[in-house]
Length: 294
Ligand SMILES: Nc1ncnc2c1ncn2[C@@H]1O[C@H](COP(=O)(O)OS(=O)(=O)O)[C@@H](OP(=O)(O)O)[C@H]1O
Image (cartoon, rainbow, N blue to C red; front, side, top):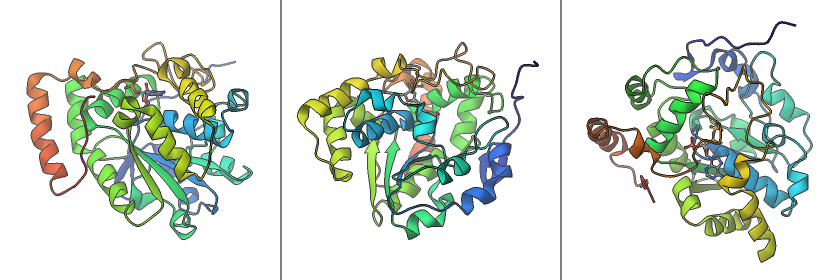
C-alpha cells in the first residue's frame, strides 16, 4: 500500500485569518457548529499549553483517575473543533457524535468562534503564553507538522510570526481579543508561565472554576500525571500515536522542552531588540502583562 503523505501547502485565508487550506474548505461546518450549554471550551493560540490544560481538565472531570484518562488519545477525548484534513476525523463531526459533557479544543481568534458558544454561555478556559516562547515552539511545530508550509530559516519565520502571517494569524490580536471577551463571559484566563511557576495554585483555580471539590491527594495525583516529564512519556497525550507522515517526531518531538524562557536560546540580541519594539507597539494600551521567563 502506498504510504499516506501530506504535501506541504501555503496557508489560505478565512475572514482575513491565515489558515490551513483543508480547514478553510470546511469552514461552513465550523460556523454552523452547535455548542451545548455544558460544553467546556479550551481555547488557545497554538503552542500555548493546549494539551497540558486539556489533560488537566480531563483529569478533573474524571476525579484524577489516570486509567480513565488513558482511555483514548487526547485528540479524541478533547476533539479539535476546526480540524479537517484528508485521512483525519473531522472535528465538528466527531463532536456532534460525542455524548455530553464535551471538552472542545479550538485555536480560533475570538471573532471566529461559532456564535452558539456565546449564545449558550458556555464556560471557557483560555491559556496564554508569552509571545517569544510561542514563536520558538511554533517554529519547531511548523517543521514537524506537515500541515504547515515550510517555515524557512528562523529569522524569516520570526518575521512572519510578528506580521501575523502564520496559521491562526496574529498572536497579539488573539490574546488581546480573548482577554477583552473574558471581561463579559465565563472565561477563565490562565497564563502558561503561572502554570509553570505554581501548577498547584493554577489547577486549584481550574477546579474552582469547574465547580468541583477534589481531595488534596487527588489534586496531587493530577499534578504528577500532568507534569511535563509524565506527559512526555504518555502516548495518550504526546501525539506519538499520530502517523509520522503528519507529525514527524524525529524532526522535533511534540513534547519538546516544556519550559519558559527557551526563546533565549534562539533570539539573537538584534532579533530581541526588534521584537521588543514591535511588541510595545502591538500591545500598547492593553493591560495584558506577560512574563518572558520565570
Ligand atoms: N505538561 C506540560 N508542561 C509544560 N509544557 C507542556 C506540557 N505539555 C505540553 N507542553 C508544551 O506545550 C507546547 C505545545 O503547546 P500546545 O499543546 O498548545 O500545542 S498545540 O497548539 O495544541 O499543537 C510545547 O512547548 P515547547 O516545548 O516550548 O515546544 C510542549 O512541550
